[in-house]
Length: 283
Image 1 (tube, rainbow, N blue to C red):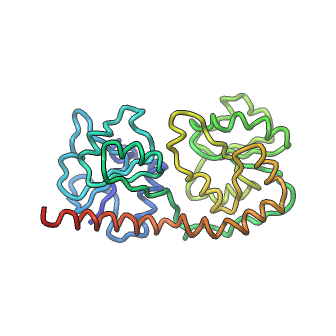
Image 2 (cartoon, rainbow, N blue to C red):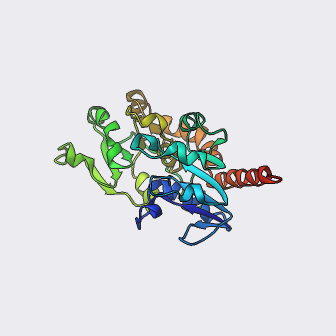
């Protein structure tokens, strides 16, 4: 029995967070022995997804089965007890190498398991025709600071902009009076359909203290919809042209699907759990 103890479940939230969906729920769909953890269960393996020890909570330390801490954000910047929790784990998994490099300072077994996606729900990829007219940015609204510097380039190219998020950042920027901007509430069930309304995705890299640790999951998700991703003004110019978008698709799309199939994450976690079992024999 394998169980995922999610960040949202620990905090009593009914809705899954992005990390819960990407790193737990998607895997469970392709892993019959796995499910979300319920209070009172005693699984053989428990994967703590951003669930940490605290002064008055020691369950990650006291749980006696195989234990994996899964981290996809630099939670130490928010005061989480990273070191104490890691010391209680058999293995720590992370979504990126920068996160893994940090954790390796105080845990010897750290494995990168990238954010991947369920390919069974993908629609047919975007077909690219003509000059680009519309771009899309998506993600949590508190990360939209990375988009703001690119807005002048959006205006220069006279592009329509779709923003898919939990809240509309354009209201904060006082840009709502421009009818070239469209806000769509993020919905996991319709995200690929909404992404494909654009010609390419605009996802500039952030420069905040957390950004160096972030995964490429938004980039990959857009690419799985069939969209190239622009991060710079030069790439915005490049993907304005139909030929360049088609060239990107022909050279990259199949490789991305092969590398970012969530079934690979299930396989990797199974191998990690088996290794924990083998190392515990004779102890």
